[in-house]
Length: 109
Length: 112
Image (cartoon, chains in turn yellow, red):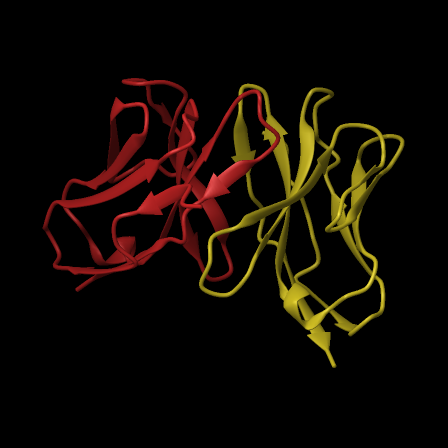
């Protein structure tokens, strides 16, 4: 199963963009890249996913490198409610989510 | 808007006890998963199931077993609880045709 690597922590100021990087150099061609985030005292929640193309939704954008060995989750304007642990995950076929240790994002007012 | 429900938020048991953690999902998902979460280690997959009565070992199955007698319910069993099984346990479910997995809010289990 592909392993993902993320920085342990990152900081941002409110209303600034945040770029959360992830390396997944061993990902296979059929594995999707998923991002989840976990707020305190809650289970992880889905943020976004992609295979090869960049993706946008109401929560974030996902930029995937052309060689698929890395990706970046982009929060366009961080808010205090975005403070969480963000997980970059390879989703295998058949379905299985392999988590890494995640990036703890701190957002300052 | 209930999706994945774990039977207890907090549970305290004693060493050697048989412990059952229950998880129920109301989305008719085929796939269900049990993870444990420990500081500095992230989420680690214990067991998962792609269908009723099917089970697959994850990365850390030792000391655990599971049961899936009905599609909506996936139980994690600690046959003889030990202190190193003190942890946060998270259940998740997903559809193979869906985009994402849904997680419960977790059970914080303490083994004394």
